[in-house]
Amino acid sequence: MIGESFAVLRKDKKLVLFPILSGMSTLAIAAMYFLPLFHMGVLEQYKAYRTVDPTVYAWLFLWYCTNYFVIIFFNCALAACAQIRFGGGEPTIGAGMAQAGWKIPSILMWAVVASTVGIILHAIEERSSWLGKIVSATLGIAWAMATYLIVPVLIFEDDGVFGSIQRSGELLRQTWGEQIVSGFGFGLPSLLLAVPGILLGMVGFKLHPLGFLIAVPYFLLLSAVMSAVRGIFTVALYRYATAGEAPAGFSCSSFKEAFVDKPSRY
Image (cartoon, rainbow, N blue to C red):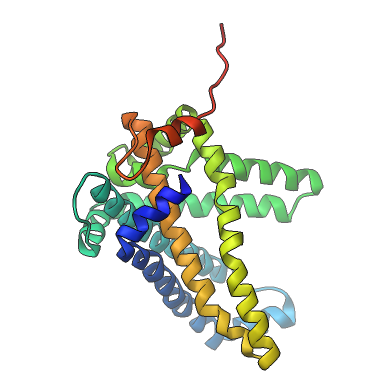
């Protein structure tokens, strides 16, 4: 299924532009939020007194939400293009951006919810004992699983944010096996594809202390490709969960083999 996702990306290489645009946008937003803090001397204040003005935390939360919004927006645009491809159409960057644009209110609300949950889980982990860290990690995994299909649900359905969360959870229960397989499956391909970059960095470092930087473009491209592949796979899984049929480019047997039958209650 991961290989089939790569095959779809090879047919529509332009889809990798969405993760690239997302990464560039998040860097620009980070600069927009953190440069003012730097000029205000907030970092020096924290180093000296280990405290900052409460308004700074509000500013950082706003940055967190904005960052989430940008990432989700481009993920939705990628999902829209994947849906067009699976439907037999010819996706374009403009079409994906336009469809995501229609969902900006829902994307914004989801960014706020996701940011809030992320901060709460992080606070539990940071301020708790080892038991609290385990609880936080468990809740984090459950939240990530329950919202695994939130992007295609947001972009293709009209249930609102909280309805989309519930809908994603319902689809999770229907396709539990695929979710588990995909969660473990993307790690190994990413690791294998990272090997050439590691070797390139090692060779560069032997030639010059800063020579390892030659591998940076490779890892940035790898990150964009894997993000695009994961987005394609998510839409394919959504289509299978909602329609019961494998989308174009995927074999139905792959989904059936990945599905884990749940034992009957009776």
